[in-house]
Image (cartoon, rainbow, N blue to C red; front, side, top):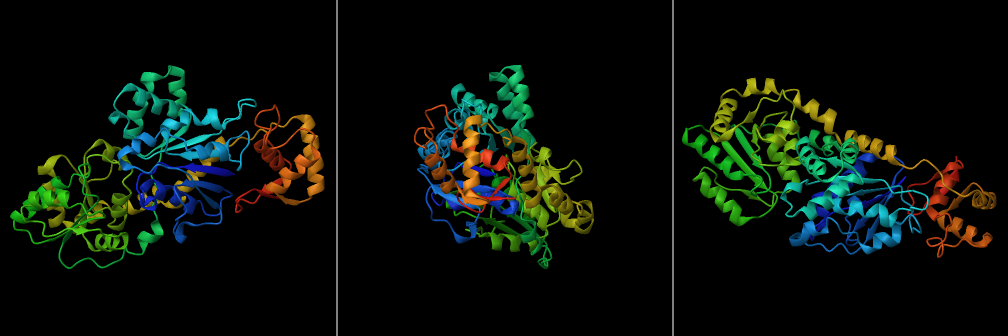
Length: 461
């Protein structure tokens, strides 16, 4: 199969954007599955580690702008129309994988082929389902209509339910049921092999508490600062490590002020390897986030420490973690009490969460997530072949001429040469089979597509 990836990117250095990382992780963990990915990006300044033989990166005008980030949710770059339309594609695609939710009401109309009722299946990856934050009904409606035209992957149950409540407001009961049926919850892939390399690191000699995340309002580091200050004030002897991948002096200053000297410094600009090392040597970590989709960073901490982390008893965490997970707090006082208990009873605390690492591996290992998504793709890929009888005879003759191995370009040139009316310039306007129809017909005749190639290369099974 051949899949278009249409991401939602905002960062200037887009390869650091979480949306880019998620898609590249999915591709990586798919391994040798027969898929060719057409990955739309702003430019071709791709690091070598992201290059794979079954990925074609296609530069388009992405309008990277964090200030207008959500304004891109409904935008389809012009190049996408020209390259991937079912009517006259440069590349034949079987499905679309996108984070541009509002665009999903338009994509089937502009890329599908209504003459033969062959819409392109759309799989929506909803990284931040913040539908309640959109002002005005028009924006919410656009997102809802997007859900109705795709199969949506939400990152947690809380986000799915909030989104489905909006769907119920704007769609008919029958369409609501259908949209809900096609929506599902799945976390993000976690690189277990990478985490296993640090899991056995020796702990720091002194009991160490860790906090690591972006320093932002949503991550709520001030709550952590208050708890650490209380622990210091109570006279307990421990180390505290605070890291952040960014350098946000103003926010960091506020946290240090809140801690009243209990936090000596913050490791800013902390890269992933240092992050993993510090987590692995710490005895426990703290999560204080007000809201999360699927918190990969905290799940990595949870795996590395084998469950020795505390989480706020908020909807996102309650619905993400198993009911058996014991370390959840309500409010600052309970948070401090829980940290103090783990400090005093560390070995006992370990016995309560020794199962956590296995749970994460079973549910969120990269290969597990990739296999589940692959199943979703296969459920939606078009199996019917719509080629007119007269035209199929012409193509059959071309197959005899081309033999057991040929490529996409050679196939199209040969069909144009032997046909009186079919050519790639007019097929989009006339009632003729499209290049995508021909691609599917070739596969139905027992040929296999080499998905390691940018254009289909066919050979007989």
